[in-house]
Amino acid sequence: MTTATASSRSTIQQFDRYVIPNYGRYPISLVRGEGSFVWDAEGNRYLDLFPGWGCNILGYSPPRVVKAIQEQAAKLIHVPNTWYMEPQGQFAEALCTRGFGKAFFCNSGAEAVEGAIKLARLHTPEKKYKIITFENGFHGRTFAAVTATAQPKYHDGLGPLVAGFQYAPTNDLGAVRALVDDETCAILIEPVQGEGGVNLPDDGFLQGLRDIADEHSLLLIFDEVQTGMGRTGTWFGYQQWDVQPDIMTLAKGLAGGVAAGAIIATDAVSPSLRPGMHASTFGGNPLACAAGVATVETIEQDGLLENCRQMSDLFRSIFESLQAELPIIEEVRVKGLMVGVDLTIPATPAVGKCMERGLLINATHDTVVRLLPPLNVTAEQVGEGCDIIADVLREMAEEAT
Ligand SMILES: *Cc1c(COP(=O)(O)O)cnc(C)c1O
Image (cartoon, rainbow, N blue to C red; front, top):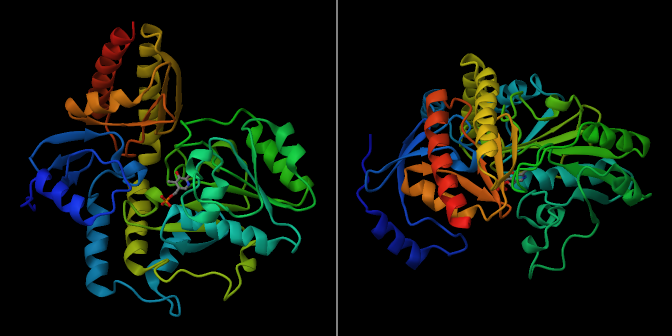
């Protein structure tokens, strides 16, 4: 195991000099991880219930993925998409046989969303270009993806944005219907909003969108960058509601922490991504695809969809009983291992307080404590993490009165 030679302090100094400071960072340099645990340069250990912002779907350095990367790296790291390559075919098969259709590979979530938007415009008649997206959604930072993201805070100073995006409130089918016109080509939505605060769709809402799409010949695109790869307890989020999208986007946990993104499109839609109309130099490279295949195998062979559902129930019952005790907890929202605890007060202080106690979590949408634990999190780790969060929230409740 490698030990760090640099202290957090010296790494921070290097960043200050050479790295563009566009991120708010915690003053800690992380050097290695294993499962749900990660260590900093000073040797402190943290239990991480938000590993890799959801990308580390199997926790840190999952053994099968490490082995697959090592073996693939020694054989072939990269070849361009002018050639066939085994890992890309295997990964596409692994995904599509658990989902649907055919795959196109890229390297990130925003890139997958961009590709899905291009595909939707290419597939529908020339005059149709408008895409309906939703308030509090999040689709990434490239120009079309950030325009698809409704919140003005992501747009400040960037204009003019990409033409043709319209925003609807979630769970309001009437509002969506009112926006559809002859120029609408698609509806784009996250089955569960992640960055927006772990917001679940009402019963029938996603099916209602499917119906609207069918009535008006629109494509239904699910952004499953966060909900895919078993995160909700099924391979993909759409399977929770049994609503079939025409296109879905994947990234984050797709390749067990290696940068990878994908579009999955139905056989009816996928031919519209014609040769010459879209491409990605690194997309579907052998290294990322080998990691992706190992990720799928690990989820399957270790029964992690079942573990996800069990740990989900455990989180729900723990936080619902805490809610009964603490009035600062407004709502508990859980789908698989997407966990949101919505507070009546700002959630950000909870992050620092948990970190001091050796637990890593996230706060989003001002008031929501959010967890995206790996699918292999254990009941013991859930218990340990929730005990710390409970202590911290009790302290915050005390301070708030
Ligand atoms: C994180 C996220 C994205 C953006 O992914 P990047 O890899 O950061 O570009 C897009 N959509 C959803 C739903 C996300 O959670």
